Length: 79
Image (cartoon, rainbow, N blue to C red; front, top):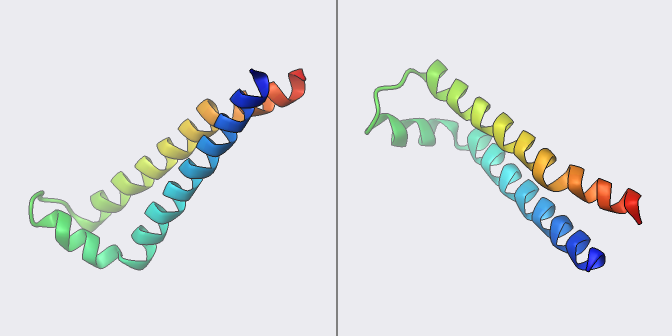
């Protein structure tokens, strides 16, 4: 049971870090396109848009660490 849980947490962490890399890569390499797409619907300055995405990336990364990586490390140490 513990091995299955470790495997699931490792896969979850890997998938979530992949999503984080795609999001941050899209934000870096397609910034202008993303800003134009979002500014059609919402009135945002570039600074506000950047702050929202930076905060979202930070919150997502903290969530990955708290809910996937830390429990995975705890299970590895408990074996």
